[in-house]
Image 1 (cartoon, rainbow, N blue to C red):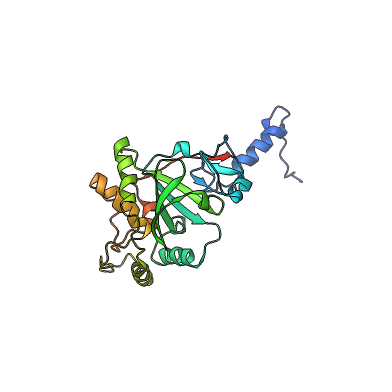
Image 2 (image 1 turned 90 degrees about the horizontal axis):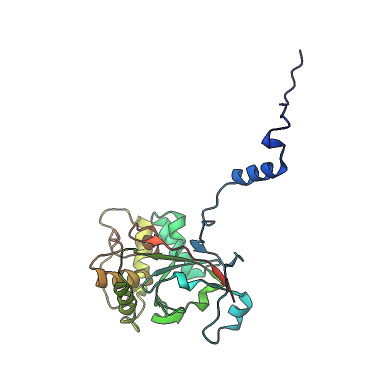
Length: 252
């Protein structure tokens, strides 16, 4: 006897509705980690905007042509800003690959740079190859994914003090030697007991240490106690002391 494999759908069934079928298809789509409500990760490739930003003065023509700027009204002084380049240069690639090799998941290892937001709507304090400097975030908006994190339990005065403490390191040199030592440690594995970096040349600093030091001077606590002896951007991505801040793009 022949039995049809097709199932009869009553006319009253919601599956008869094309709207419901479309809705079901949306539900069935896999979730993407970056597609988080509130845009916890700001991606330059995302053209969604939630309002308008008026520049406080002249801005780079390339940024004006890009047409979007982060909603910095959601940011607070002392916030951590993490950066991940869409097309990393060789230094950024080395940091990303070193963090992965050392044992971090890609979702944390991909963050290769960190800075302290200064609360003025434009500037961050960072430690880059040129040393510790105060720079506008303009240069990162078009080319990097941005992620904002903060300790939600801080008072307003503590947030401003973190920003001010980062500025006390202006002019400090970048710790190139520490980067090379971290690369050696990555090959051995950051998780291995005894694989720690000697804390030499403390006046020199890398980006993630600048953030961690500025925070600890104000709060008396470390954001991260790194097993390797040096705080890395991946540690700042991973730490549970900080919460991600929902932001979004504004049109220029």
